[in-house]
Image (cartoon, rainbow, N blue to C red; front, side):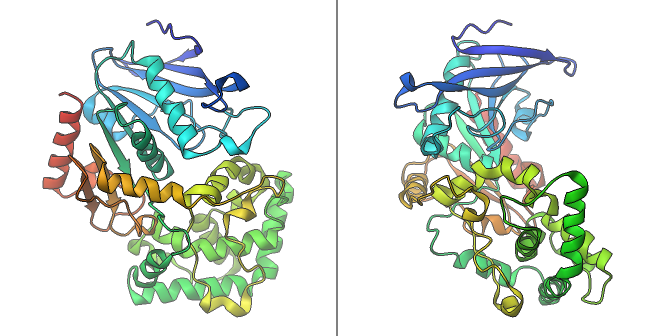
Length: 402
């Protein structure tokens, strides 16, 4: 296979499953698509090649890209090729010097448009785009600005925070998620964690010291610990759900039990510098365009030391300016409802991330919204009720010209 597009380079070919070839690529992207003469960067991609006569799936990860071989559900259903993109400013795909004003949804959409332009001469069959969570949002944004690039888009678990000043949908969801007993257990566990913070934070700090890590970005191990505790209910419902309620530790559980539960649910390592700095672009996007949810702290007021610490600003260095642009999400939401075409949303009914989901409107055409009963953040078409799964698969294959 040859790739002749200027700026597109094959870095290496890696072993692949029978019937496939797998490549790591880079594509030169302008730092600012409005002014390509001002320099650029090399965006990292992977290409899983099945055949030039097959549909191609553009997988927008939303973050850094893994160079391990992986097939998304649409790729499997279509037995197609797959191009996986690294989001600008993540991983190695960052301009140097970095002008953070160029990290927005329109510039990223232009990146994905350029990827398709670079490869369409080889892969002429229909393209489908897909992604999950932030990658699902990215899929929608690309489709909004370049609606003719793909024959259809499948967005899994994609939040739609239209008005960042109004988080009632998220708060209401968490106040009614699961059973009253499970919600009470989560709140009791939060209080127990904060009441024992002296011992548990010391343990957290010792863990970081042993790794040669620290908390310069967030501010301290104590602050990182409090953030993790405050986010725990949201992340519990997002990733675990009602079936995990028996594992929520009681207030009189051991320090080990409380610590291990929090680390598993809220992922304590992600707040340390070695990981947190990798996600600065994510929190920058949350704080400038995508929006973020508010956590409920009414039951913990007497134990909180860092009001507002869960906001995106905590995770972005102060020398990087941030200004929220409320029109960005409103524009995408309006487009989906009035002009969106060939869109498929697959959400979990028990996922707080989509408490405020994308909704179809009178102007949406050939578009569908599916929900997995009891589903959390990792839902798939295969988990839908049988009739819905059959319908969604048929639609996907129709879009792909099959």
